[in-house]
Length: 218
Length: 218
DNA sequence: CCAGCCCTTGGACCTAGGTCTTGGGGTGCG
DNA sequence: CGCACCCCAAGACCTAGGTCCAAGGGCTGG
Image (tube, rainbow over all chains, first blue to last red; front, side, top):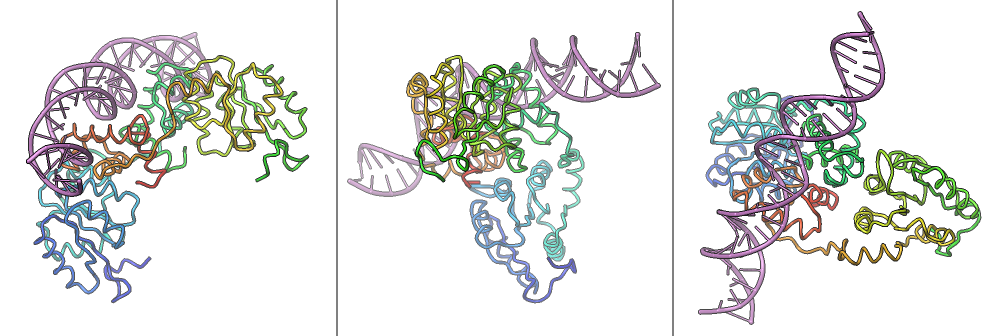
């Protein structure tokens, strides 16, 4: 929409930010600091993931600063529910658990930062993410690279049989039913399913079904 | 579109029929007989489920006469893949296996008949189905009623927690992940999932996910 | 205060789903 | 011809998903 000047002009380009953290003082701190920037407007605060998802839908912020550890619904859960939403989500966590990085990025986060970040850098980060960039704290980046390329679902071509199986998965059929429909052993179907999962880069049949319907392969 | 006179007029209301059966002589028999009717036009023939799905998409018939036992992809499989298609599918089977009726109807069949049907009755059936009716051979009807009301997903209300779990299922998360996100034990999640499946009237998480996205609960 | 609902957890149990590995049957190529 | 490669199929094996059953705590309304 607008260029990446790192700073949009006065009023029309205000970056709307939503803050989600279960700790009120953190929210307050972030809010007052971010509001000082004349290109950023904090439009809301959420105390848990549930609220974050709800407010993200209503307030339509450009950027969501999201804590991971929260009651009711945590950051990862909220992230999952925001799939497909236009909001740019920046995970902002205190505890540095490398195991969270992969799932978060795979779930569509646009950034992964730690709370010890320099405030000025955070502001820069918000602008960068709003501009379309993805950015990771150094430690997070390391964690990502460590466990391999998590998100390269290289469009490996499916074989005829595999497409067939995928379509039936997307129709909600069980392996047994698929086997009957294709007149092969259930074991065979499992093999095909396994290959489909690998090629699509997903972990189970449910994700495969979702993938299929979203990409019109249904 | 047109009234249910049981017989649409001359040329504009021709009922386009596609025949799917792996036995050529059966196809030939059906075709010649149906083509004698001046309100019915057989627009194509398929020798297996694969072909049936393909031709249904290309020829856009009004009615598909579908055999169950077929190579490559059987009737049930074809039916599953035609979900959402406007084609009215009439299952036309030779073997009378009551166990097939439920799945077929649940998969969206508009009719379930046996091949020993009186030809004149078949023609009537094609017209009726084209007119929007659903009809079952007596034996099929019995089989349906026998195994309970297969398709009354009475919209039992989900509890707050259950909706939450459903949304996460629809996001493709595993029970373990959902448990982490909601900060509860995995067993708890399983209980919720189980309840959701029951209330939605589906058999597994994949179907639940599909249900959720289709009904906008995602 | 008790009844009833919701949420939670646990244990025991069974089955569907997935992974890994192997082998047969094409087909293309040196 | 022999080799390599791919698709399909299938057996052995392990794990996640789901069912059934039971029970305790919190909240609400009669």
